[in-house]
Length: 242
Picture (cartoon, rainbow, N blue to C red):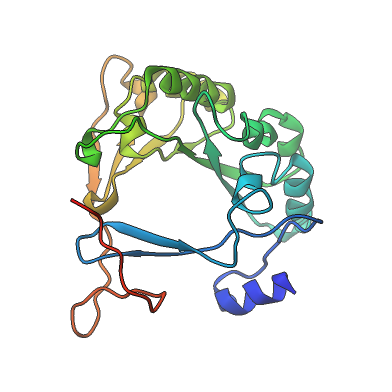
């Protein structure tokens, strides 16, 4: 039933959906939008946060076998090139203790499968601060933990998309990227920076002594007929406290 519900929601935008089914598992879902101050607002749906929902994502869900099962729906004769994108939680006290990265540590995942591109979106919580998000950073302990996590999987990774707090922390991004995939380095880093958009860095491996040139990518803007933001929950919009 959950497969059909998701397919109806997403329509033909996604041709096939594989929901990991199991007793005590729930697919976490949220409504996500930007308010008129361009702050991200969100609301969890259907009690989907907790041990049976979002918390499972940081553990062994999807497992190596879950990913294999999804990829094996396609065979080599289809001529399809597969892109694998994964969200990984970093930090010294990450809920899943790094289990969500386990599939990338097993090289058998890539044998006889047309995985041509691997992107990862590492997430971690910055230190609490009253300052602007552009100056937030991870603690030194969490930054070191994230760096070790990224180094452990960079041999299969093409693209990394951290948020600005992680990128501006004490990680050695040149070291993370320069010894990466096929000894040529991670191809690119796209830094997510909320309403300020993103910043794309190319060729870290060729710029071992400094940051490479970057490309600014502005945030997408959704316009409505009256110019006001849309709150999909139908409830009063919660504004951040100054």
